[in-house]
Image (cartoon, rainbow, N blue to C red):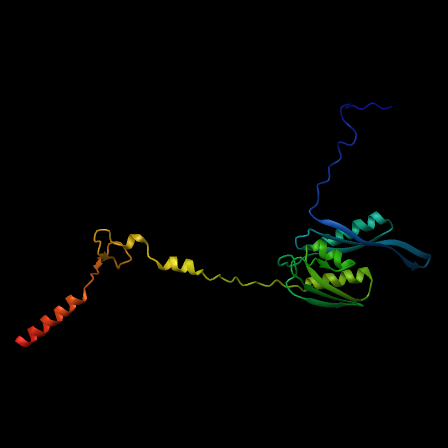
Length: 230
């Protein structure tokens, strides 16, 4: 047995530990495809892979190779190159969309919270990796996984973000009444019978006095007497 110059070195320590990826990966299907050439048939494997971060980004890719592992690796690289962003509003899509691609026809509609993902096959896998939590969908036509997956990606590309207007809430009656009442600082403390009519500090206060009915009648009589004497 050959002796190592570094006995403290353990086997496999030089390998780098793989960092966890932010994208979840799912393999839709692995099919064996053949191509007829002059010498016979050439067989390869085709892989369909979906990746997404479940926060609005999703990608679809396909790859072909003579080995399954190599085809999945090619499909994953293609999916990362073809990533797209899906606009989401409270876990659902902003509006309904209908797409026809080859022999497949899809209809995707938004849903209320708690509905879940009402979909199946490739459509469900892509919506799940895109981060859609509530959606209604219907598939017509082809059952081919690749065609349905391509139709789903086309439908997601047609989604457009909708700006939801912010509605200001009307103040409650109690808050409106509290805003209408002036603070206690506006009342002049020096004159108990006077009330300050100015909102700014430093303005002159206007005294408001209470006059009885008898005093008013007496003043009217005095004014009439003065006019008659003249």
